[in-house]
Image (cartoon, rainbow, N blue to C red; front, side):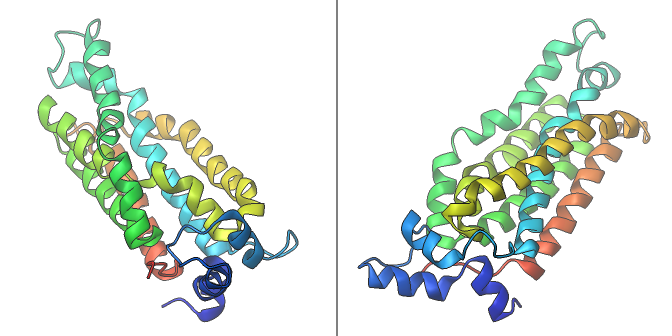
Length: 240
């Protein structure tokens, strides 16, 4: 359970409510710029690194789920018979690689409402759990349709991280330092974009029966670690 000091530095729910009531507003989890900046502290105050680590890990899990497939998607489609040969595998692999993006289209607005009602921590919890399940399901898929559904549902519809990355960056340390926090989070995501395809290609076909199992389970393991860190370090910010 988070300490009072960590809660104050991370999301500052009590101080946010006090500031909001003073300005004639109620706390909803998304405070206005002036309120968030006023309670977050100055530029010299240390960032709440535990919460920041959770956000960085969540961004890494998200990007790994997207880009680890890039290095082996086409070869996998040919190896499992989803494409006639490697010359036509790229067309099929394109559907796999875009399925998660299409999955986010119908649920992005719903994730925003979910975050407003239940708070950022709940979004992070559900997102990480969904990405873990999606990684396992995709890694064990031998059917093209099962693989596409796994990516569409778990890695797409169940992924609310992209929706909250901006608001949670402001919520962590105030609007004045939102760009700083976002820069750190996106740097971790960029590193994963660089290393994810390399790791995926290296681990591909370690289990011939399920060639995508090893790279997918690696992403799932990272997701479990991020979920545990979320439970330990991220304070509850459920709006009242």
